Image 1 (tube, rainbow, N blue to C red):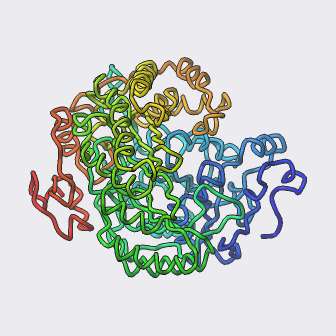
Image 2 (cartoon, rainbow, N blue to C red):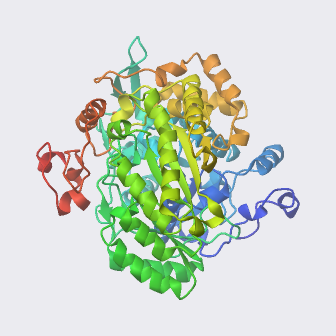
Image 3 (tube, one colour):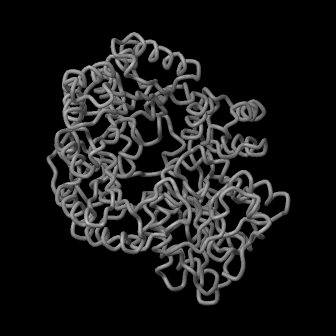
Amino acid sequence: MEKLALSDEILMQVEKPARYIGNEVNSVIKNKKDVSVRFAMCFPDVYEIGMSHLGIQILYSMLNEWGDVWCERVYSPWADLDQIMRRESIPLFCLESQDPVKNMDFLGITIQYEMCYTNILQILDLSQIPLLAKDRGEDMPIVIGGGPCVYNPEPIADFFDLFYIGEGETQYRPLLDWYIENRRAGGTREDFLHGAAKIPGIYVPRFYEEQYKEDGTIAGRRKKYDDIPNQILKEVVTDMTEAHYPLKPVVPFIKVTQDRVVLEIQRGCIRGCRFCQAGQIYRPVRERDVDRLKEYAVAMLKNSGHEEISLSSLSSSDYSRLDELLDFLIEECGQKHINISLPSLRIDAFSLDVMSKVQDVKKSSLTFAPEAGSQRLRDVINKGLTEEVILKGATLAFEGGWTRVKLYFMLGLPTETEEDILGIGDLSNKIAAAFFEAVPKDRRVNGKVQIVTSTSFFIPKPFTPFQWAPMCTKEEFLDKAHLTKKGIMSQLNQKSIKYNWHEADVSVLEGVLARGDRRVAQIIRKAYEKGCMFDAWSEYFHNERWMESFEECGLDIGFYTTRERADDEIFPWDFIDCGVTREFLLREWKKARSQTVSPNCKAQCQGCGASRFGAGICHESRTPGLDNPSKNG
């Protein structure tokens, strides 16, 4: 690094200047003259959030392992620095070299949640890169998007040159090799994008055009070149054990959201909850070898100096060698006073035994996610969790010394009734009662239990069985929250129960952004021009500006949210093949409406389509299900 992009005078004016100076432990500095490709890897939120993201750590480490590539990091400047950069015309810069992002060959943006969409425009704007891909010249970086939100990239398609669909470990080398080859041959930006569109997993939106029916739904898609695919199949890592992993994670100077070593033990989930997008798009379930994980844990703790290690997975309890891995970590970490964090555990006897091994004598809170207040509705969403199991788990936890329980529910789920909503308070009360029954008075710490019941609002996401479902209006959401509160207030143990609910305005907007088509891009741009940024942060969210944008652009929110879709409607994301078939999702949607439960992947194959990848649970062992697994997954 030659010098900082920001002067000392500016750094003294902003909160947490360490966000912008780079040079952290394990950050990678290369000689510009020695590399062929410079890649800016961006998380479009504040430094503390972006530095906690495992995906960027993996790609950063992988790209920098290649001698001809230098990958650097960039995050959204916080509001204070944003104002200064605009006023002083300072271009957004990468942390490692402090060079402007606009001087890079690629700007890769990982898109983890819809409420960061205006921050993407902030990144482009501050980088002095035209917001619209069609306006960028030959000297501008190739802007590429990845992450879970690109499973419906259409609302932000106008802002990106290309999208990477699926897991990043597989196709970046071919993509960068093609970039180098095209540049040496004197090819244009158009030539590069045309060639990139033929690489598996790469989607170039400018080469495709949506066609609409009179009612506003999609009639079809037209493509610019005959030799590019009609459908983009997601990229999948078939061997997780041999996949790249960052053994020297970058260690921030300041405290970040997840200030710990993260050990990804598996990808995918066997459970099949019908509201959960991650559970579908990350299929099939693939585990990392336990011996390799032990090696990784030792190396990462040594190389980072962190005092905590977290096991990352959608459902850690389902990792087949969890016991063995934990026994090793307890011995390894116990000697060095390193904490072990276990998110995503199911609340059962096995998981509670596991947690009792790794948690201190002072028990922290436990998290249950029943999602719905009644067994009927839990069957609709295929939660695979009964009230008996929930209460038994709570009782075991209370007997084990826990006194604080967090409960997560959703409001507005398909087929939900008033009885289902009131069931949230009823179940919360039963869990509180289980504490008083399980723990004698003389063993009660502070004399009581604390139940924190939280509700979020249901948003139908692409590539879930509920993608056909209607969503509630803001007013309906709030009515449901008030009914939930009323139900809790009527309970015998109401003093032991605290109730929180999510903001309805944000949920409605997230629903539009999650299921929108290309016409939504004008809304996002208009809202950004009105000053919307950091929409995921409640203090910066301005719903009235978004509503003004919809009105000025003449788009109806209800078209994207409250409207139920016909079985055969073409969705904006249908050109993507996420591995599970539309037929499977539709079958699960119909089973939901008949309150029929589907077994998990280990119990019985449901013919979802993921077996085509020849990896993970689909490849290792399987019980035949509804269809021929060799064809359907």
